[in-house]
Length: 110
Image (cartoon, rainbow, N blue to C red; front, side):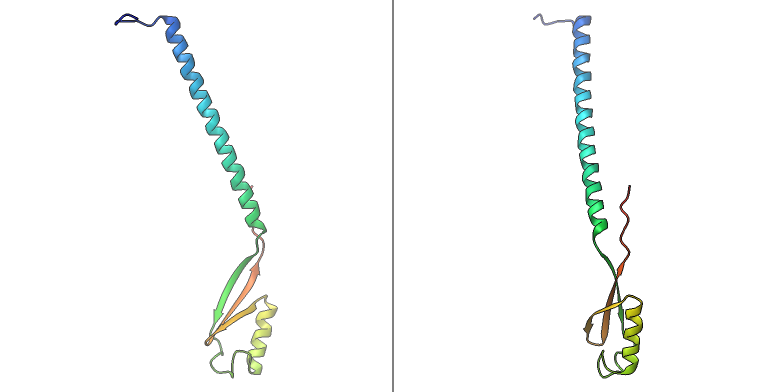
């Protein structure tokens, strides 16, 4: 090939066609990767929507004045009231009572 080679119109057109095909293949691969990632995000979101969700509450109310967290009529009344509201006593740490209750299921994004 000579030192000063000029591309012919056919060579330029072939090079442009090859570059266009390469870009189209790259775009197709990127679209496939994004579709796979979107499907994975949807699957994870749908799974997470099935998991139970909880809210927690701690209270110091009347705990120190009783003979223990389960002692006394006032405490029994308070525990019954909280249970009726859906709260479950899950632990007592020192003078702190910890409760939890289940939240409604999350809705999966469309």
